[in-house]
Length: 456
Image 1: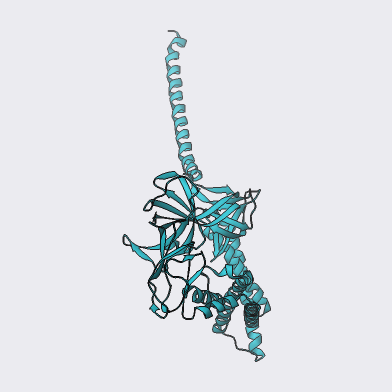
Image 2: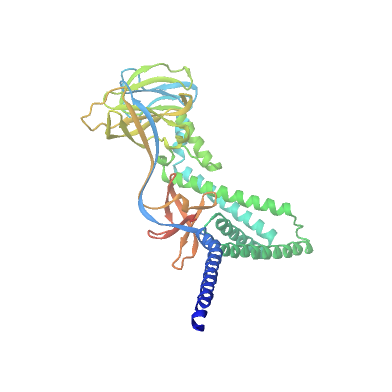
């Protein structure tokens, strides 16, 4: 029997078995590799991706939208904002009046107007300057009081601690900030706190040992409160001083920020405004419902009409009251002429809200500048867009890029050349729901963080 022939089938069988075993091993290795690689790939896929944008230049417009109608006969009813005795009527039915002309006054109006004008005299300026000086001195005193209780070294580290806490808060609020950045910022806070407390304890002991002052926590809390209040009063006095320096035109609209000095200016402005009626446009007095000596309330006492200028009465949501200022530009769009916008200007804002379809609204009157051959009829429906603020060729960033450090104080994270983030304080101007104007702190082309997104 041929031995070679009889051994061949066995060799083939062993080779086949070996190949099968190798195939099984390869499959197991591939499966194991896929098993261990899958969580890692999933982790990479779930890593947050930094979102950025470039600081750009552009225009930013703050608007408020409403709807209304063109008035028949272009007329407006005029009323005082408060009640009182009517002491002066400068027009009667049929008289032609000019925009800005004082048509009627209540008792005390002359004195109120004199008080208003006196704000901008040398004496008024001196009073505002004195208030600013006094509040600065009060701030210096409050600073020295706190510094005395804390000690110079503890006061220094107290300031460093506050700045470090602001930085840490901004990083904690920023989803793009890394754990390392947060840990480093926390370390700075901890170090400043330790040094502040060390020097504070040392100063408290010194004052007690010398018999100068026995400091407790309530003393320090009161000193801090006095310091913050002094800062607020100084800002208030400085703002009021700037208004007085600018003249009467700077005190025509309501003042929203009111400490003692700003409140004083606002009250004087209201006293003058509430006791007089001013013609909102050129026109003719078409009705009169009061006589001198009569007690009147906040209801209409006269009507002024014009055939030379159309008026639009429209309504804004009460949340847009601060955008409805006399003199603000308005763009009108008529249902009949959707592709033909027309400009106008707010001439009056009624002193009380009205209820329209169950909703409180601000009633606004605007003069329509018609420089077109289009036929405008009384009763036409019109959409109104009030231009409350405009910034041309401004530096603009998305709202998402802003990080509020303290009320009214903002910063952004600027992406550096190495990819790291640098917190940069900025001054913010106009803002809407999407974008903000940057007055200082950035340049066009800077790359800023707007947050992160999950890339999974």
